[in-house]
Length: 90
Image 1 (spheres, rainbow, N blue to C red):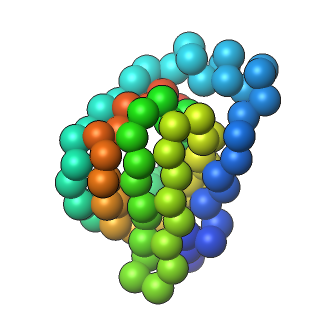
Image 2: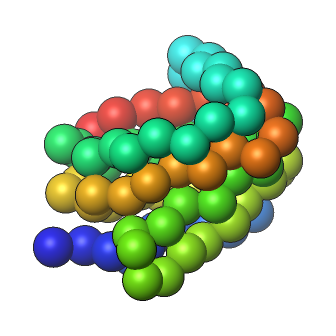
Image 3: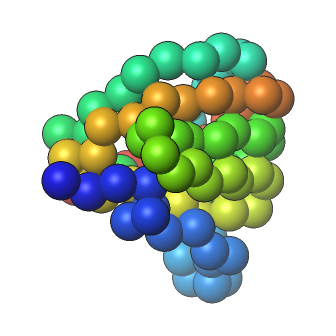
């Protein structure tokens, strides 16, 4: 079972950023919720800040970060500043 240590957070290349900007947008205000990934998600954070925890470890990200969540990850999102992101599953 993957955990938050398996989440990839990096700055995207220009090509990666251009690809991400063709994806749909998801927005969410400050909140805390549980989430289970049933497939891999890649996203480019445009605005906001969030911390993801699996109960043991956590990872945070914000504007400009390219984030890859592994399939099978069970976690809790804590959005501290409203998030806007491009996302893609698969």
